[in-house]
Length: 126
Image (cartoon, rainbow, N blue to C red; front, side):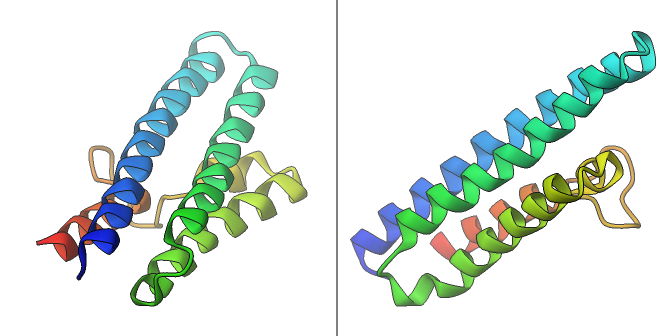
């Protein structure tokens, strides 16, 4: 991998990490809104923000990786995160938005799909 590709991949990993932290924070706030404050509109807004974060990541990552053929698979994976988020928003499904990034066998404390994706990309840098 040449230096340009390494820098681009590093930038994408940083963007993924930042988005993952932002999403965890949004989810934490959403849980407080729903479970402690019984505020369903705030919960819905937070889940929509989660989806928007994923859409923005897909756009930003796609632009960063544009023109680097060896990263077509990464761009496609990012696009997939964004497409699923767009579907959830278009359906206006809070359940679908909340389930984004979490497989059926997810347990509290596990990494979500975005965090695991970042880990696989870090391994490619080595």
